Length: 98
Image (cartoon, rainbow, N blue to C red; front, side):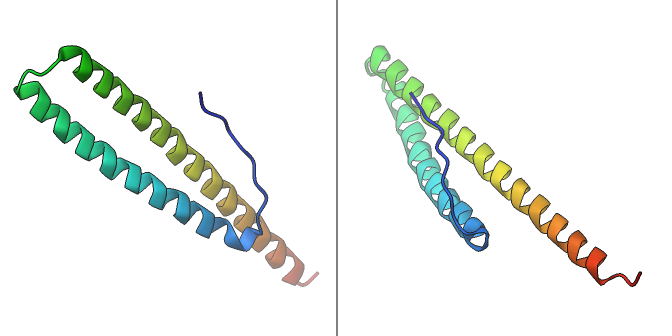
């Protein structure tokens, strides 16, 4: 089972938090890629089919979680872009002569 969590950080550090999240995702993707390569070797050697099924299912679940984490990164950065756009529009509105 997975859980969503909420954290509070300064707006200036949001991009760094997302960068850290992406690094973790990249690392997990590398591990999953290695796992899939080993599945291919097992499949060609016709090892235990139940073990293969379990391994494949486990990797699929990891990939689904990584996809959800990428979606979180996208959502966070979308929110940051919206915030910065609104901030810039507000500054421009304040600078316009009346």
